[in-house]
Length: 227
Image 1: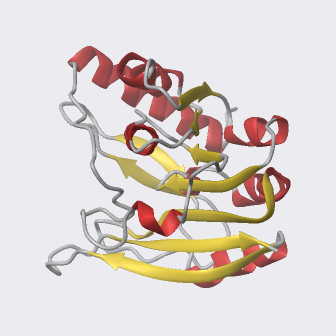
Image 2: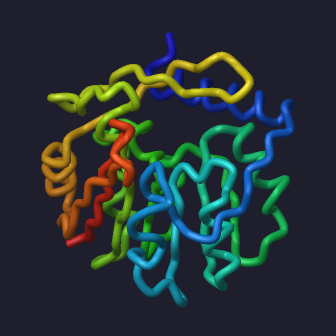
């Protein structure tokens, strides 16, 4: 039987296959959107990336690492779904400064040289933090930064879990049937405790909500540093 992460990886692969067949166009971005709307902080919170080793975890179709590469930075982008990785390669495979990697994130972190900055836009909650964070700590250089966003309340208004467990969520699929995934939807307090337990000091946590106040969907944006 597949575990939660394997089931979710299959769902994301089916998502990529669907959109490849559908020919879905994903526009390039000109700024980061850590939340679900283009409001709030952008890529500047990553700090000065000149000459830094940078990693995107769960890069999907590659629009955010491609944005950084177009700004002149070098970025590694790791994606576990083969179909999503292939979509990224088809679009950005020749972009200078961008290295697209098909791998489980933990496997890559275990094998790669340490990074100065690791970031993730909505992808980290799909990976068990008790598996990810022990690999992430040695993959960051001393003083290296981790920046990631995570689901806090879903579109139905359901709040985060009260313990560190995965729960089912719905992955909408434009032009297709929704897919079931599992996510670790945690409170800022849970994330803080987990990060501290694994050698990372939390510098700032922001809650990003609908600027118009019409949707209950929200996420946390967490900035941490290897101590």
